[in-house]
Length: 80
Image (cartoon, one colour):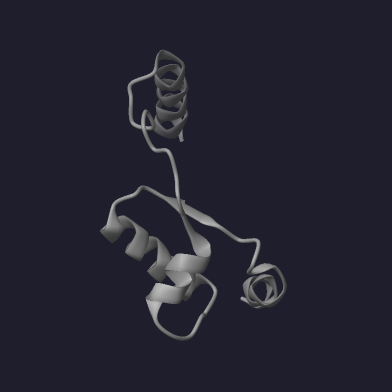
C-alpha cells in the first residue's frame, strides 16, 4: 500500500510498536513492523528502533467495565 510506504519514508522514526518484555514477543513485533512497512534487513535494528516495552500488567485482567463492553459486543456480533 502506497500509504504505508509513505508513512515509512516520512514518519518511521516516530512510529513505535509496543510489546511485552518477553523476547519472542518483541521479535514478533519487529517482524510485523518489517512486513507492514516493507523494511529490508535484519530484525535486530528494527527491534531496537521501533519496538518498545509496554507495561502489560493488568491488560488481561477481568475488569468489570471491560466485561460489560465485551458482552455488548458479543450480543451485537450474534445479532449480525
